[in-house]
Image: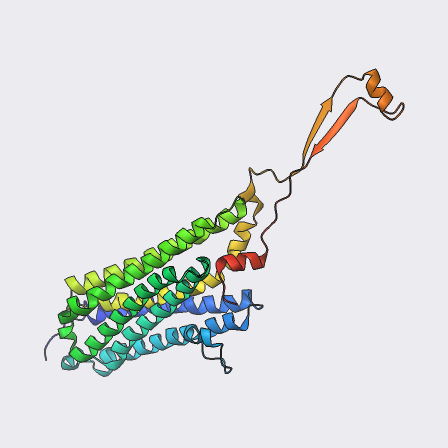
Length: 338
């Protein structure tokens, strides 16, 4: 029987599967935390998290986004089925290990859709923050659509080639453009969000603190997904006969899913940071009291209340109190769908 080195092939894919399941657990936990923390959210936002599990029909502009959680679970099922097929059903059958199975290729396509849904969510935020400037939304949408198009092309090429040993043939025509547009679309969305958030800064410290945190979250999300996309294409180009690129592909969809859920779940934390008195230390929000003591003169005595003057004149200066951001103001800043 022909010996097959499984360490760099299905061993690598198995490592990616395990990491994927850990991240899926985090996704599930974030979903639970969402319903515990935000029971008063609108039905549309809840449907965004729950997916099509709900029997009622969602509003039309949320239909695509509502598939998010279902897609995430479906992807896990596809990957688990593919790995079971290779390492259990075809155990001691090395000839079958080179044949691509439909669930493996479908899992890559589902990952592309998950990334597309997540990027559409953030593109909608760009559209709202920009005051519905269609030229900016158009540029962002083109980058997202290019990522989605090359992702679907890559999935189609995988199905056509069928044999896993032939996958290096699509490095230049599909995989590289797919990775480039993935990174480019994430960068465009992040730069647009950061510029728009920076321009929304005001003279209020609490607003600026909120904007700073939103910019940090946007940059971190972009760095994480872009880094994994770059590593995936490097692995595919330099080690085409190993399956480390599959390991990273199993994981990247969960990163997109968690970034979307984290955006919804950090609202309470951001409210606390924006309204935390510690963040306003150094600003003079309290009433200042100044005491002026002057010598008593006859004119002062004659013009004051008889025999009750003390010679102490008290003057108060009050600065207008800061107006704390309400939850609805923060939700508008966070662009939570309503």
